[in-house]
Image (tube, rainbow, N blue to C red; front, side):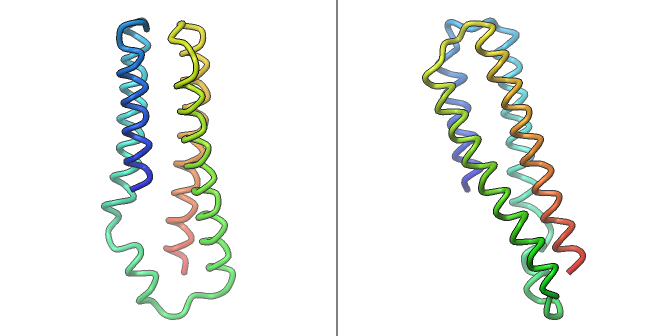
Length: 126
């Protein structure tokens, strides 16, 4: 649900920049929205990951520690994205500013994807 809220925030940013940003940069923002939606869908439609974890034999403590670590990193990633979007809301639509926004957004999306994979691997090994 939080990913969907972030997706809405990014859409609002894109809409706000619609008249003043270069069309190619708006297209790049649209691409990032697709990436965020794909991550959201991967979490939402993950085939029984949560159920498999809770129905499996009792997990070992190291597995639980890895899952908790991944969860904490994911929450930090989501908070970072929200803060980044808030900064974007206060910024301008100048090409240089938007390119910097997109570079940092790429880093944050990459981190989120890595931490989601980290969690998935921890669940699979449990």
